[in-house]
Image 1 (cartoon, rainbow, N blue to C red):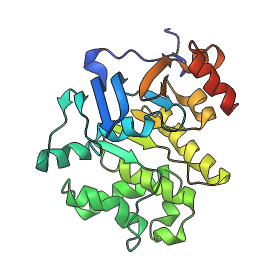
Image 2: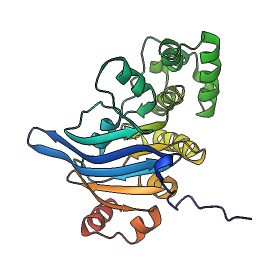
Image 3: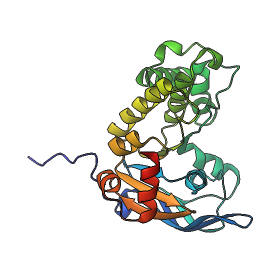
Image 4: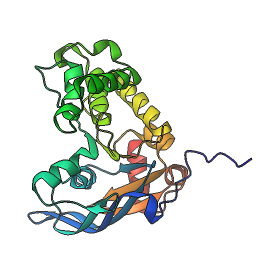
Length: 258
C-alpha cells in the first residue's frame, strides 16, 4: 500500500493543479513598492500560509488575488484565467474566490442564515430552499448551527468569524483567502476559528492564509511563504522553515515571535 503523505510535505503544483498563480507581480502605493516581483503558485487542495513582519506585503498579496487591490505589473491567474478588468465578469470572478477578512462584514440587520444564503440566492440564483439547506449544513460544520436564527450582535467574535467562513464556503469557491482572520479575536475565540480552519485544511480546501498564528502555520500548512519588504524571501515546508530557516531575515523574524 502507498504511504500516506504527511501534512507537512508540500503538494506538487503542476500546471493542471494550479488554482492561483502570480507571474512577476508588482504593486505600488505611491512611492512604496508594496509587492516586488512576486512569483507564486497555490495548488488545488493546498494550504499556503504567508508569514512575515507587519508591512511586509502579506495582506496586499492576498487582496490582489480577488482584485480588491489592482496590480501595476505582471499577471494573476485563478484556475488558469486572468483577472477580468471590470463589470460583470469581475463580479463573477469574485464569486469563485472566497475571502475571510479581519472584520466579519456580516449584515447586522439579517440573521446568520440570511447572511450565508444571500449571495448564493442573489448571485448564483439558487432557490431559497436549496440555499438554506446548504447554509444549515455549513453552519453545522463550523459548529454554530444553533445560531442560524440569531443576528450578528448576538454572536461572539469567534462565532461571527465562523459564520463568515460558512458564508465564504456557501459560494463553493475555488480558493478561500484568509487575511488575518483571528487578529480581532480573544484567545478563546481564536482557538475556535483556528479549529474550523484546521478542519477545512484536512478536508482538502484550497487556502491561502495570512496569519501571525505560528501554531496553525506549523501544523496545517503545506507550504510557508515568508515575506519581507514586499518580496518573497523564503519558501519552505513548515518543518524546514521553523527548524532551519535559510535566510537571516527569516531567522530574525522567528526569534521575535518565539
